[in-house]
Image 1 (cartoon, rainbow, N blue to C red):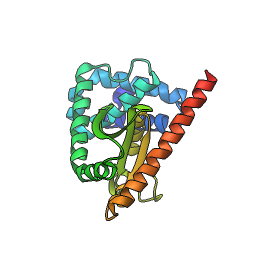
Image 2: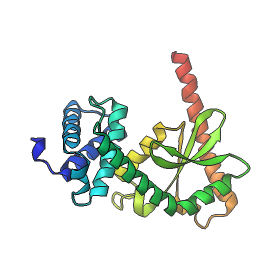
Image 3: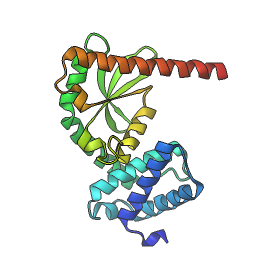
Image 4: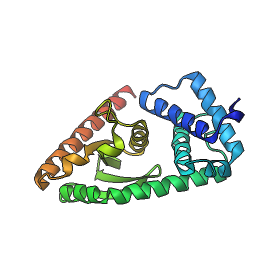
Length: 222
């Protein structure tokens, strides 16, 4: 019975379901049913239970990530139905994102400076995540530029593979924008401004090309 599960087990399992569903597009019926039951149990226990468990903020953040995926998937019950629990998870996530935003401020300034005069760049909130958006007439919601960091976003083995938690965050950002461009911090550091600009613009142009092509294909299908 899920009533015997610890808070850590509940949040870890829901987070694993969210990552699997978001990154593979798969939503196995048995896992979907389990996720629904675990959300019901989380709602029954409420905010205090998760706040007082070991490493509470981390598990609250996982619950919020899973909640966003539940909403996207149309999971019966809609994820976190307990208002107090949802509010706490959003607050914890916002604080964590604020910390990441501060750590990334130098990278953000570098990207903005490199694109100055070519694209309008602004900071925005997308599904609770601090995001750098590039404006373009064909992309009303903007194109998100995400600067990844090796120590935080990638596994050491297998090399180059993104952490599940990062993949879920990127998927949520992508759904709230009209495109997503990735560049690693190492590609910005020590590179001349012109090289930074060319690299970013090539990736933005590629995103615009594929985005516009998909839009045209959709119109043909309609």
